[in-house]
Length: 344
Image (cartoon, rainbow, N blue to C red; front, side, top):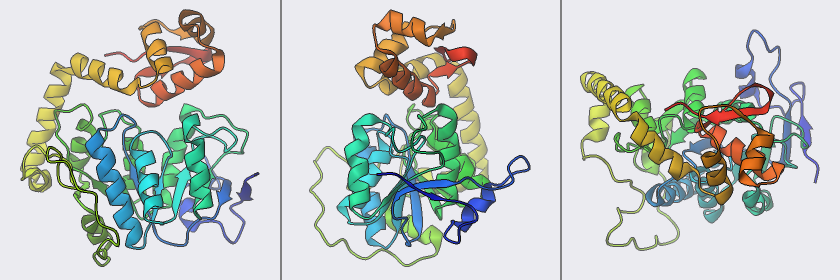
């Protein structure tokens, strides 16, 4: 199924995307759509691909509750938090939109092709700013995040490391004047440092769907129509994440504590950088291909062909693994197809 092109001159073109126009860009991007863009106001839910089990459960609950409250759920279709957001919306029979980093003929990640089909079949949409045959590239994901933030009323960051791609979506939301909401998270966790920094930067802390709706100035969501699944005794209550302490959200709003937290985070990042980043890299390298590529790289740039030789992977698999690791800032892409490990 070919995508429908929506040009800036089309009457149906989303007006918020004109906010992306810069001095170097005279018009916003042409859109490529499969399915139907929802009329409901949208909320973007983003986060790390290497999400914790608690974050994934929280995301599904949050997306379902917001969907039942009348919002559409938007995300990037990636592993982790993105996929959980789409699944939560589908569970609530709410429209959801996947904003892709490449053309729709190249679903990324490949294992989510069936999920993307379900999104369209359920009345949602796949949206890209490049033609269908365009392969996914790192730069396109940054542009994707700007479109995601522009077309939604609020961006919610559930879980994000210090260099998570979700923080580029947060930066776009802040730059475009959209609401930015963040789930408080332990700042000493590699998965949570990005969330702590966003709170220091003025993001609104949220812990449930009602908090997001309050930010938007709307009514509280109605009760869920289906009973929640019982939480395990060892797990946090449904719809919450473990916090450093009960007063964390309040402290994030106090300016003096903001400065103290910023200094503490900066000191920790500098003193314990190597250990935390190494742990984060191992978490991010989820597949056998990603682990093989990561172990084949060091600080010296290597060409894709050399990576294939070291790992025994076919070029397509090696490139896909390099793309994922590049998006997670574990690998750095240089000129002429050269890649190296990020400096630690």
